[in-house]
Length: 257
Image 1 (cartoon, rainbow, N blue to C red):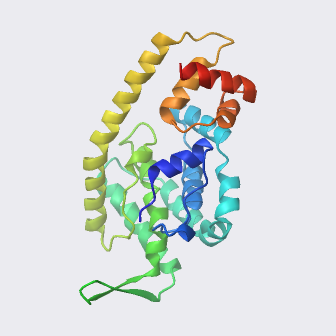
Image 2: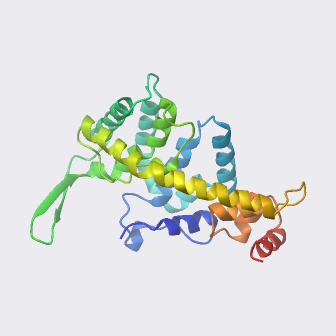
Image 3: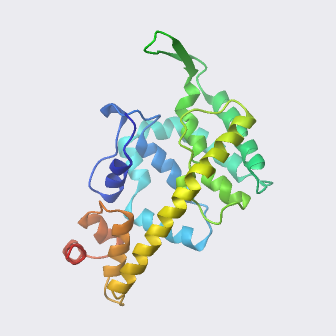
């Protein structure tokens, strides 16, 4: 069973724990570790909106502490490899083309395969056939989460776009496959992300018309957070808008009127 995005949102919003493989979910590694490494990939972001989003998320959610609680072993196991992949991401010379980005992804895949256990896993299909694959698939997500950063560093995107992380659990076997995967990801996710952004901008516009922002009121801030995280709890809202739990409870009641 795949990880439910709603469960991840509830975890970030403070109303649940992260989905875990121990619960029978088909995760390549701990969700908490994936989120930790993704937050780490946001750190060098320099665009104004990226910095604002990063500050808000880090104030609302301590990815490192959560990963230490839920996926500490993953941090030890995958940390050095992630740093190696990050080094490849930061190397100069990236051009604004799928060809250039695919070359970096293929380079990362080679690093993962060198670092991976070379033994194979074997699975039996319902019809009796068997398939085998190496342990490198457990590290494929570390490469996939670098795609938004590569797109930004190449100049193909102005901001980091988390929706453009490919939904693919296995490493590609050739440069051409990486290029095809990247093209498919952009083709499928970019229009969806644009529609989602358009919807959120319309909702934000209505919020600003409905609620008046003042120096003392945090109602607009609370309303914007609820658009992004419908599962937002009172305690997490209090942290995000620098209010007391009682004040955050008042804001929640105002939003639900």
